[in-house]
Length: 295
Ligand SMILES: [Zn+2]
Image (cartoon, rainbow, N blue to C red; front, side, top):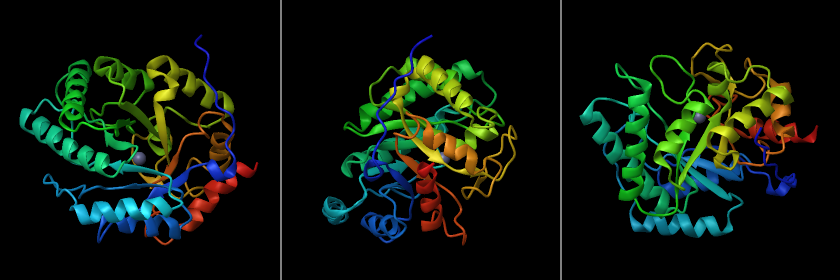
C-alpha cells in the first residue's frame, strides 16, 4: 500500500474557498464578483464556453486584471474550458477543433497567471476507451506545446453516462501516465463523483479509499483542486446536476467529512452551485462551506 501524503492543516486565512463567477464585461470584473460573495479563490471562463472561436482579451483588460489582482483577497484563479471540446472523440474534425479551442483558452490562462485550465475529458463515442485515452493524452500534449507557459491543464472527473471518459481515478491515471507531463493535473467534482458511484457516503473511510486510489493512479499531489457541489441527482445516477450545499443528495455531513480530511481540505475548493436565488454561487453557499471547517 502506498502511503497517502498528508499536509498540515491550514489556518482559516489560508484555506481557499472560492466559486465560479461571472467575468462578463471584462475578465477583471470577476474579482469584484468573487469578493462580493466572500470567495478567496475563483474560477472563470476565459472566453465564451459555448463558442468555438476564442477572443483573446486585449492587453488593456489583461493589465487591469493583473493590477486588481495585486490587492485582491482572491489568491488562486482557475479557468474552466469550453463545454464544446472533446479530446476523446474519434471525429478528426471535432478533435482538431477541440485542441485548437483548448489551446486558445490555455493561452488566456497563461496570460492571467492562472493556476490552470479545467476541462471535461471527453467521450469515446463508438470507439474503445483505450483508443480514446491515447487521443486524449496526445491532444493534451499538443495543447501544452501550442500554449507554452506555466498554467496547468486539469482533467475533471465525469459523472458517467454515455461513453464518458474519466469516471474513476484509475481511468484518469491511465491518461495521466500516457501523457506524462508535469503540467497535467486533476480536478475532482463531488457531484460528479457521487453521480458516478465513486463516492456515496463520504465517510472518512470512503474518502481515504478515494485518496488511496488517486495516490496509486496518478499521485495524490496531482489532485490540484476540488469542485464542491451538492447533487440534485441521486447516487450512481450518472447525471450531472449541481445543487446548493446541503440541499442535495450528498448533504452537509458528507461535506463536513471532506473538510476534515487532511489532504482534501488543503486544496482549493471551487463551488459551481446554482445559488439560493438561482444566480450562481452566492455568499450563503460560501459561508456554508466555510462553516464546515468549524467541526
Ligand atoms: Zn465541475
